Length: 117
Length: 117
DNA sequence: GCTATCGATGTCGGTTATCGTAATAAAGCC
DNA sequence: GGCTTTATTACGATAACCGACATCGATAGC
Image (cartoon, rainbow over all chains, first blue to last red):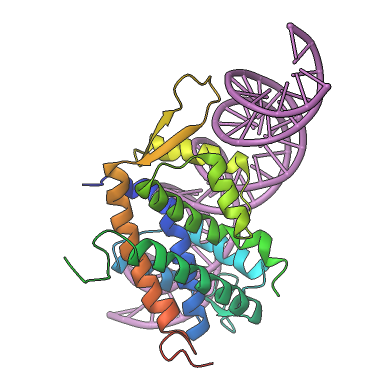
């Protein structure tokens, strides 16, 4: 059982969450705490010290745009929405996901091709 | 065309390459230079200063196992093969890829569902 | 045999990401 | 007014990532 994988596998999975974040931000505004809860429900945990800088960075890169709740103070909830640049990135990422899916999942031994368990 | 994304998108794509590396290592032994070439052919580039420590780390984590070419010196070609632990990780990662594929690709507006342009 | 080149891996210093924990701030309840 | 809840932000330490450079063995020219 990969217990000690849990620590290291994030190196890979973290960027998967990033994709999910971008995707969700394209459907409806998201905010940090919601993401933290969402992941925790799925059994994964990401540190606030990772997530919030991450969101800031994505905004700095022009992928997301944030809007602080009106009237709230400096620490009011901050909603993030996908920008046009983010959509472009997501298009590119989707292509890569498809390639990865085809190659790593479909072509896997006993993969999804036959739905065999 | 997202030109300036090229720099930042790696934050996401790099871990995709990691998955590809693990997958390929499961089919036949791979070595650093081959990976570098392979990626370059696909239009992407990863620094040796990133890749080689990465491979070492994967071995340290027990995902890969390396075997140096016999007779060669300290810098002989080093072939990496997937271990049992790596296969376990890959199973886990495949599940996540499926989820990401379903959610981010299939459910995308104008996604693969209808193949409509 | 000497040197140049090629295939390949390793190393270095600086920059950036990630981590867990703790601090902060507004809002709701009583 | 206090207390809990919902959120974000700050901080110090560790680790990853990068490009450029160094290294090493084999091979080719001559």
